[in-house]
Length: 201
Image 1 (cartoon, helix red, strand yellow):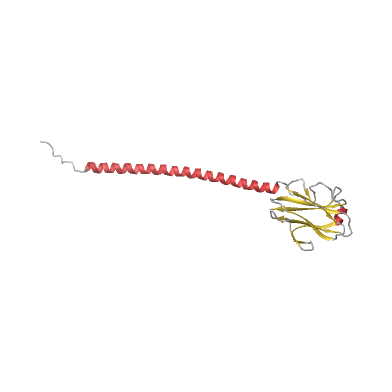
Image 2: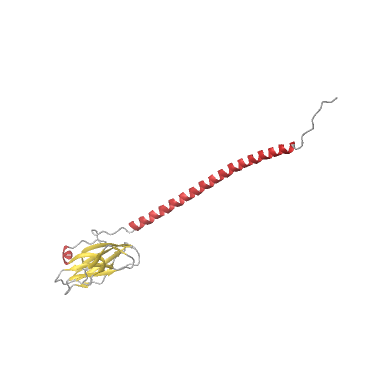
């Protein structure tokens, strides 16, 4: 007689299959999570690298632009005339009180003395003339390393006290104005009295 063998339980295969399925799902989720984390890390790393590179070039460009503005052209000096002429003691005794201003009083004295001007704003190069002179006063204007431009000369005959020249510029830059005392009207024999520097913003 055969020994008794109990019949197999119903549903055992389903439970085993369910267990295997859950195990596979967990493994897939773990693998997917690792892949997702690595992918995001690489993406963040690339984004950070691009942002750093962008910031570096933006900063470098800004510094370069500032440097160019300050150094090109080299700002003028009131002790080294743009014309390379020597100062004349006689001219400095005749043309005195050389100042730059953005506004003048009615008697031609400077009201707002400054060396900084806005684009298209008038720059007044004021001076005081010693009495009893026979000759001319002239001014030569320089901007951004240019060769200079003469203003119309002013006759000193019968004049005494304050006067001024004026100019304006349509763009920014570094500038200077030279004051001359001239025996002749074309100022071919001009003697340099002063240099005053300015900036147009």
